[in-house]
Length: 314
Image (cartoon, rainbow, N blue to C red; front, side, top):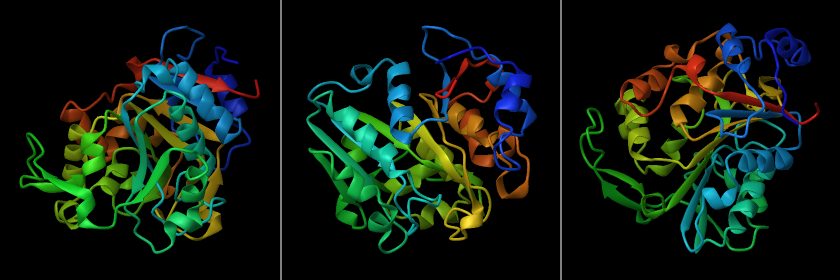
C-alpha cells in the first residue's frame, strides 16, 4: 500500500532501524514528496517486505516487465556475487532478489538471459547463494567471467582517465536490456559501493580503475553502460569495513530496496539511508557520484525528483 508520509511519520516508522541508519537530513525532504500517483517515480523505495515481494512491487511500479524487456531480446543481470560471504551477511545481492528478478524477466520470453560477475574471492558464487538461486530459474545462464575470453576491447567515448581501450563484458556490450542488482555497502576507498561501482564486475582489468583513482573510471564506465533499471539491495547492508567485512556486526538489516532508471539518482539517494564508515555524507561528498552527475550521467538534485515510498506493512 502506498501512502503519503510526512517527516515525523517517517522518523517514527524508522525508529526501529539500526543506529546510524536513515539519519541523513537531506533525504527527508525527498521522502516527504512521496505521493500516491499512477506516474512512474524517479526513485522508488520499497521496505518491510520479503525480498521477493519487494522485487515484484518494484517491477510493477516501473510498468511491468514488458516495459523493460522485449520478447526475443538479450538480457543481462548484474548482481553482486563477488565476496565469499553467506546470504545472512551483507556483501552480495540477496539470493531471493536475484532469483525473483530472473523469474520475472523470464515471463517476458527473452531470447537469452545471462547473470554474470567477476568474483574477487574463491567460492564467492557458491557461498553467496546467488548462483544456486539463479540456477533454479530455467533458461538463466550464470556466468563467472574470470577469463579474458568473456570480454571485448572497447573505447569509452569522451573518457579522460580510461583513455585507452578497456576490456568490457561481451554479454553486457551485446545486451538489449541490462538490470543492475547491486548490494549496498561501505567501501574503504570510495566510502560506498552501490550501482555505479558494481560495473567494476563487468571489466577485466580492474587495475586500470585503481590506477586511475577509481573516481574517474567509475564515472566513465557509468557513462558508457546504460541500465534499464537499477535495484539496490538494502535488505541488509555493510555499514563499515566494507565491501567484504566478515564481521557480522557490520551487517545491518533494513529490509529495503531502492530502485530507479537513473543510476546516479539511485546511488545518490542510497547515500542517505545510513552513516557509512561511521560518517554522514551527502551525495556530492561521494566523488564518483558527484563526477558522474557532472558528466551528465544522471541527476543529483534529489529535492527535485519524485520519490515514492512503499511500506509493505502499512
